[in-house]
Image 1: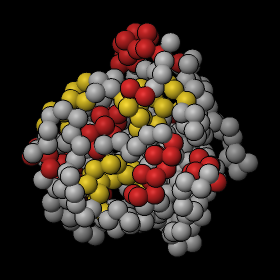
Image 2: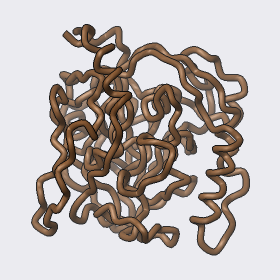
Image 3: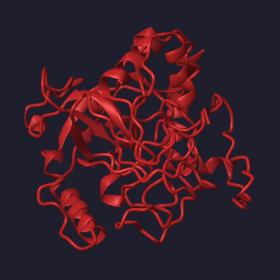
Image 4: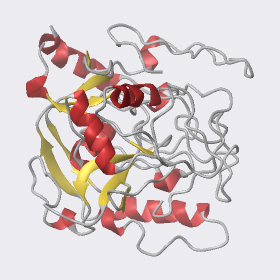
Length: 344
């Protein structure tokens, strides 16, 4: 029964450290730009830590000790699309960035952007940092995949993809669905029996009660995330890392980037829609309990950074916005479900 083991596993989860599991092989070759910016089995025992080798890449990843990878607090398979969801217990955290974290973000950005200064004020919408308390909920362990989105199309509940980045391909069934606007993402989550997570839910699932800067800790590690590394086409790529892909990777590839509750790909790969309308000043008036975001707006929030982003843009507090009917080649989504609708 799911509910009886949460407190025990949560305690164990918070003691576990994170390690690196690299991606392997070349994925989708599209050079995506954001202008503003394996399907997994149920983890009821020790997770598998080695991906199957691809034809063009020999897997030389060493075996990782079981204790090095956090175990999800609890998991549930959503019946409609087979998505593995992870449980996020009720709790509080510091949302947004402190002045010290903001200074760090700008220092990173100044170092990453080639040929120009980091855009002034780019991260100011992450302040003020404030305490948020959330009720328990469930969130998708990975981003929704192409194969899962196709199920929704086949059921007549979702629209077919109608956006492709120049020269891009959608990738295989295990790759994250992208080129989907906010309205389409909401339709999918409703069909699957849930909804887009609020911005606060998304950030809590990524950062946890200790409010880590990245899902795995407070220091950037390009081995734990699909970001703009040596394979990336963009001029700001970081050649000191090689994550094995020049754009998106199959979901769940980077086990070492797992968050405290067992969610994967919350940094990099594709950025992700959340439910909130965008207001750069919302944090100054946000309710402290289950903040829903602004009532209305013209732009909506997406988070998490993408494969064409570097360290300052894949922080969990990073937030950006675009029109709800907009499409970009590096934005996907995941869904959330209230704890009240999940039967133990």
